[in-house]
Image 1 (spheres, one colour):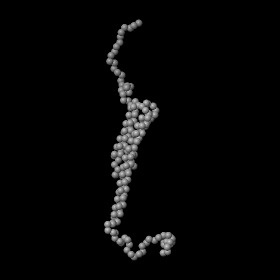
Image 2 (cartoon, rainbow, N blue to C red):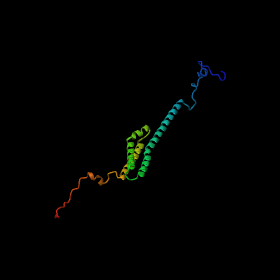
Image 3 (cartoon, rainbow, N blue to C red):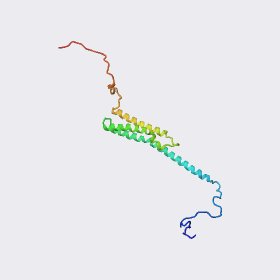
Image 4 (cartoon, helix red, strand yellow):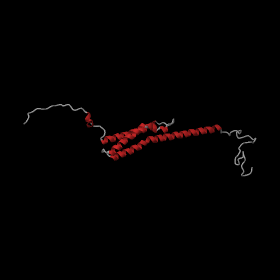
Length: 180
């Protein structure tokens, strides 16, 4: 074969034919060297796939914990916003307070959806879910505390006066001399 010229196979100029027409023993007939077995390559592949699955499980677990800790940032931000709103009843403070109540409630309703991407046999989601729930309950408690500081929670007896029956008369006085 000339240098720079390809073997003509089937009329195609640069096609190479790798068919072994020699009578010498092929590489398949040569025994493997000591300490090497072809099964070990398959084991290495399974080990690599197992390591890859373990790495993916670790990544899912780490991300689940990050998602579980996310309400803490929201808790700090909402606390700062409530502090900035003050303790007087006006539109802004009421809006912030109801936002502080609504966000944890809606987050608690969707706990399953939040952790759905991280479901795996090897990933334990109980701890992250409990932390997520606890932080959202803390946000809910912060909102209820703000309602109390605004005086919007009925916590005193005077808040229930309209539902109390009228007091019984203990003493009656009357009479006397009319003055003309």
